[in-house]
Image 1 (cartoon, helix red, strand yellow):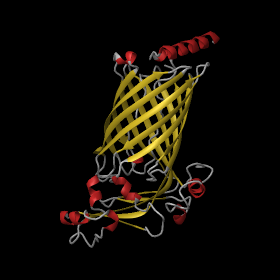
Image 2 (cartoon, one colour):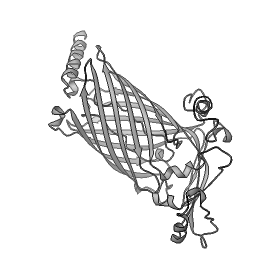
Image 3 (cartoon, helix red, strand yellow):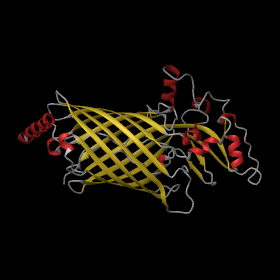
Image 4 (cartoon, one colour):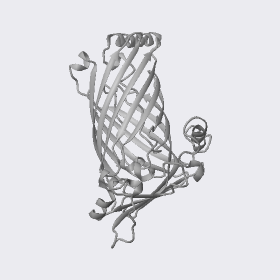
Length: 406
């Protein structure tokens, strides 16, 4: 047993020094990236594509268990979207907070109407299995589920309302900058009325299985894999959404590139860039589903830089910085003439976020730490929305990955 362990370490170190990309020489397969998808209050009901920065098919089936916690807060806000082109043109001449459109009835002033309020700590629980099909093909199966909570201590110590408002009051942001204290800490208020009159409402401790995801990846063998240490993978993605609000099928594709740079003293630099596009609600399994944004496509561009230090024992420590930007949930043209109504006088700022952010691209920075060894890898991350869309404001996660015997 000792000899086998010694041979593994020696082979591993030799792989780093020679920069070979054969998985038999390394316990690390590309960038260590757990599922870092946000706990967005619309996104949790649909499939979203988690960018794959692996460089090859795993040698063994691999199981991962992940948990995330995100604080989502957006005060109650209403929106009117006039349907008359003449009214739309008139309203587009004013900045959104100066528009004076008043809805009377559908006959005299036809308009779409929606309202939303989001206040909850959303927890995600995800199980995934990576299955090698052949030398170049991999199948990934994932189940995602969610729990709606108040975020009280100690169960949401970092992402709870009390922690975030303590940070705002004592470090940065100011006293109650977005109205959490005004509306009350540690509460669940999760309700959305869509433009078709459908209601989505969740309560404290509501738990649901949101969907099943099937992802197929193809890893081509190219000469630049060895000559330039540059790798590619291409994915096709099928999502079956199972919640009562959005029973549907999503379909998507992805393309990713990873550059590997061997460094001295057992360090390694990896740079990944990926993009994907998802067609939401390609098929709906019932007549009426909640309208989770009238933009039928979600596109994502993502990049990550990771630095890894390998130890003499064959373990590694990796630090990664990830940036992701996702396309908007609603069609941009409506932002030219919508009318938002909220309690802007009662709170300091952000009262409009419930709908305004649905017309903007969402971006996140994520910082990931991974400790890995042949038997397992453990990743911790935190995600921050520096644009302060509060969807979520702050998110943390943990993921354990375990290779399984063939």
